[in-house]
Length: 564
Image (cartoon, rainbow, N blue to C red; front, side, top):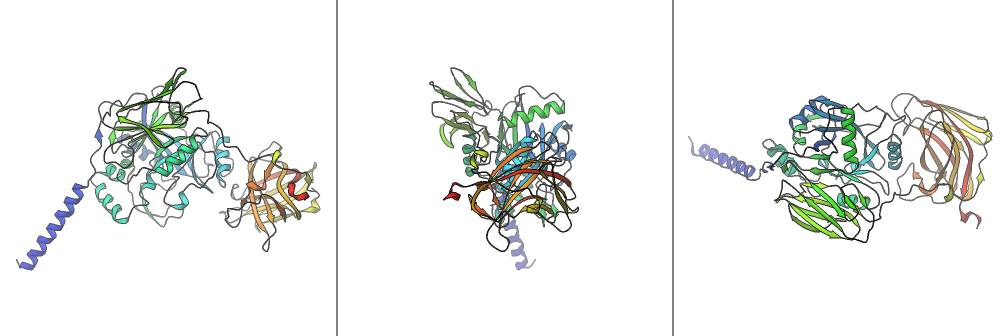
């Protein structure tokens, strides 16, 4: 054999050996096997899963089969949608409880709606506050998804929006800020140890913990760990619409073996899918659950509570102020080697291995995190116990009391006109002292169909809000819009309101309107108006929809500055 060829083979073998040694040395360890089974009232499951109905690759049945192989008790499917599809009834498949939910896109980011009692009567979209209000109206709870994703359009941008839950960890977000080189190494290691390789990308999400703690200080907010699994690497995706699937990885099974949410139940699962779904969702949404990174260690068991003379408080609950100290106790029965940390408003106040106790009278948000050496992300995270009289809901936008003045807007049909997209229809008339507005949006794909009732009020005085009474032939969202002077057609601002078959007075402040055309942080707290519009469009109305609105008692609130 020629010496050059021999040298090349030796060099190739040496490089291959070095590569194999490197990947062997950096291969994440298998999950630590902890002593004892999971407690009977703790059920591990996977939350935030996408199927082939949206941008995933597996059917619900295939996903349930993977969850059964991974030893999970439940899965919560969260396909992208607008809430108008009726949720599938809870069902057991392959011994796994399957619960259907939906991930909704809003102007401020994505929200997962859990526990909807039926389909929405119109598409849920637009302002996050409006979407969450609709979710609550439909009997559900709202979870902010991937709030600090490196992908800007996925990041949560809602300010003072009263969500119910938050994803403190989202697996689909954790890889997005890593270098291609690191991701390539993880991909190779995942061929041998998939769950450990995926978990090696996880970091402690300090910014999301800050969001959670801040929100929990003012209202009950539960936390969840989201697998956010699609089982696909795609090409040409457009937002939530999938393009071509290049590779069905990481698999559902690998993700289910990486991360789980453990529900702490009041009684064992019964096999009745409806009752068990209710029990699991109640546990998760009330904060009676904790998250574990299964790729690090399992099974997990957590005991965490606060005690004082008047009783015991568990995660997800709040304690009013008292004159005596509160004693926090936390214990990991089968993981004495894990470092357990009690966090107070995001800062550690007590730590120990396997168990901790801490007495305090300091109000705030308390939760526990458990760590294993070498891991950047907590292995276990509890929901909080809140001490002190801090619970209060974020106030909604102001109502009638915020609008001064009573400037009537004439309902004379001569004072009103129609605007519409050319293929949509609309007409109006006075009926029983109200404007009856009939509309039909053109069918087909959304392409800007709309119909609007318009009054050219042209008020030079500073207007600070709009009041009116409205009802509709079916529940809907109506876009109240104003044009302010400026540009060729004025600057347009909008605010969405819920209307149903019951006549009700509605008051909206200009300060709560958002820009309709050009993004800006400015708000028209008080301004002269060019025109007032009541608009039906495809933000919250399906193309092809026809309906009727009745609007009366339209008034403009005048700013105190208007009289100066």
